[in-house]
Image (cartoon, rainbow, N blue to C red; front, side):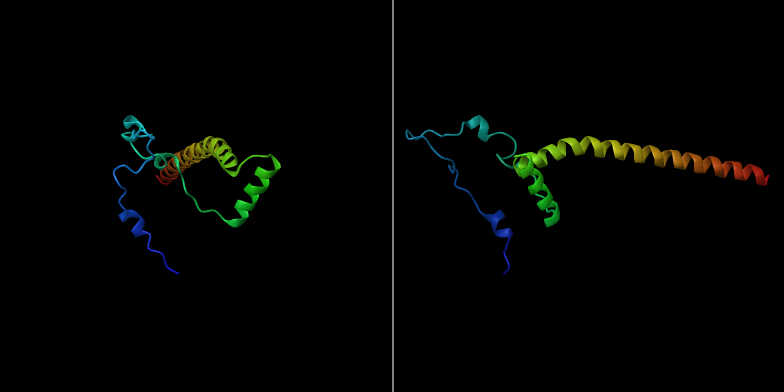
Length: 113
């Protein structure tokens, strides 16, 4: 069964699509409607993961009586600084390797003279 995901982009919402109070006033203040982005857009991430990884997350969440979302938030909070550290270390190692390679090449060129 095929689905056309393009149709969802073409849908047009009515101008007054949010809930209204009984007196007809908008339930959402104009300031919140004019904010950049939507209510979901900028802080919602959709990712695809393997079923094994999802099962591990479910098990971990169940073991510590947390929701899957809480576990993913905690993993991201912990994992981002770790990943930054790993990336910085790789970058330093690569720069050092290139520096040593150039030094070795210069020494080799001096020996040939």
